[in-house]
Length: 172
Image (cartoon, rainbow, N blue to C red; front, side, top):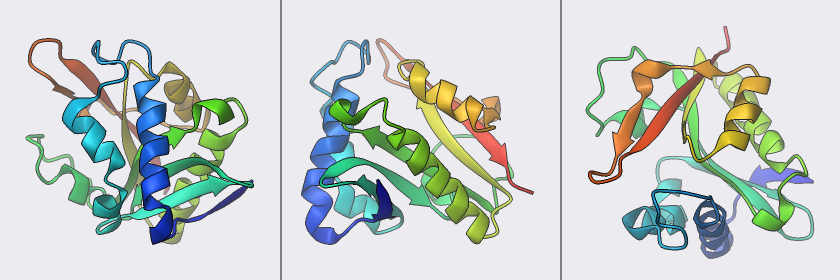
């Protein structure tokens, strides 16, 4: 398996892979298969690539992808969160593994690539968000040394809110 930066001609396929991975999550707000506006965000790889680096895992085809941000405060700028003193923190989001490639270490390889990039950027820490609908991801993050970072928690949705959970790994 090779981890590399995505090419622009792959953005469409990456968006579809990301959408499929998230649509397959059991119980995602009762929207299985229809992720609404979030689905549009998952597919908008070109938009994310304007402020972030898109990494892919490949062998003879795409296995997974992740969006890496050298400065995660860019991601949090529009959120109504307290000042979390995240200057100097890298982060990643929308980690996705093709459902047919799950269980092969793809998510771990992509996460480690983000950690390596954060270290190369001299980041103080690396942060991320996940949800209760992603227990396998939470287990992976904890195994790699991340811990819960509750000040970064928030929720989405009005009728059936989904808790979005913050995690952090200090690199210093």
